[in-house]
Image (cartoon, rainbow, N blue to C red; front, side, top):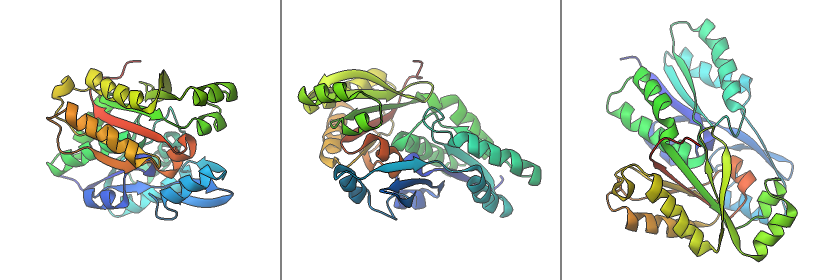
Amino acid sequence: MSRYILSCCSTADLTKEWFERRDIRYASFHFELDGQDYPDDLGQSIPMETMYQKMLEGATTKTSQISAGEYTEYFEDMLQQGFDVLHLCLSSGISGTCNSACIARDDLIEKYPDRKLYIVDSLAASSGFGLIMETLADMRDDGADIDTLYDWVEKNKLRLHHWFFSTDLTFFVKGGRISKASGFIGSVLNICPLLNVNFEGKLIPREKIRTKKKVIERIVEKMETYAQNGTGYTGKCFISHSACPEDAKAVAALVEERFPDLDGKVEIFPIGATIGSHTGPGTVALFFWGSERND
């Protein structure tokens, strides 16, 4: 079996320790915080708590994807060492980074004709993207080769479900996803929007729910509806959050109560700088395997 490396973008929103433990490499996006540049390196350059606090204090943020040139350098280092590479990118419905990775691939496969460099548009984001990587790492550790993993992820990536809610509309208004008037009314009425990622990998508003308690209940109801085998779900479940750990724990506790056959405890991760720059503090996201996304 050929030697190969599993790889993805830092926007999988997992921890440095997780990547090291699962032997997965990552390429970092970039972001600005009040004009200062940082790599989105899983909170190593600046802790996520610090970034979110600065955002609450009025700091401006800006994100940038990985360039084709950066990808070329990143991939070539692995190819030169004799490895094949399977790399998953943040959803094309959110970012153009997959196109940059494909440009790098097309340049490198001519230079390294004996190596395999697979690029996959994950159609996923945050720790949902991470849950795909977790599954691929399990398959690799069970002995699957790179071609098997590539075929599997292309056939199954739309079975990964993402549901998000936010308790703070401030950054949805700043990002232009909702109007100032809607944001004001929503805040007055204590509305928490519920969103998901559709089959094109785009973030879509689905429902407007009043109060945090009700939206926590509703997001778990979505898992009951869409999870493989319903409340008999036996897969893994990830949650990510932006500076609201207690809300994330509340969702995790309800999931573990409703889904007694889960594969282990719900794992909770911080939303990283790239995704968090757009959501702002107060977002919780729930990820699980289920029926294929078709809308």
